[in-house]
Image (cartoon, rainbow, N blue to C red; front, side):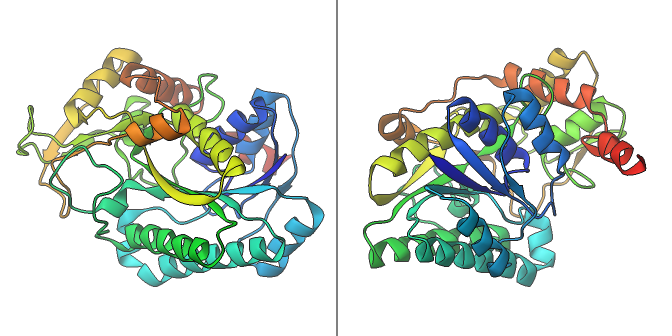
Length: 345
């Protein structure tokens, strides 16, 4: 059973590669390394003691992607590849629409050409937009509020249309909440380019001394401590969810969306406290004004994934913070140091 992983060198991609290899699957990875580094896949090999083919290919390059399918008998696809920063998407919407939507169109058309009709798509809770009711369930009306979220929503709609045109397709749309943490080995983890966009990578960089302090955006929300509440999920639990979704699409036809979260909301202050307790490092912070578009509370209703995929998140906030800190402490500059060393030799 050979699974193509697009964007497999990225944060969630690498952890999913580990889960798949440990589960006995063969994998083929394509990645253009725009937001990742080849070293991450060497670490996957180190963790699993297994090798696999890797192609430095952009999914926008139809000819190169076609070669990957020609050289490998692909049974299914897990599709991570895409640009993912909300703020950047607002500044460069055309780049996001072209990369994420056009790339997926090319991927799906090559899949069609090779009669591959099983796909797990990396979607996002951003497709729910500014909902006031929590927890979020899969049947809520969708209303993305930024270009990044709209690319995810557009791709979901495209995949629905593909299934309507050919009921042999089997598609899982996985709507992530807030992935954090790292593999328990500390060998792979989140390695953002530049200033982190997300809370825990920023906290980690403050803890390791790369940044002076954390900015907390808003302490006047209608929550128990005034800071925003979100559903944080351990990246290894998230990766396990992809394996469960893959098992489902390999055995059935149809298209379904699934929330992947813990169904528990933690405030920014609770995350800071948990990280301090699990790292032994103080996290200085400064309260700033709310960011435009942020909502007070967001967490998942993940009952559908539990019922239909047999998946639940197993790791708690302490596990997430402990593993995130182990990764950051062992790799203060992410994958950069070894990359630089290799380039010098």
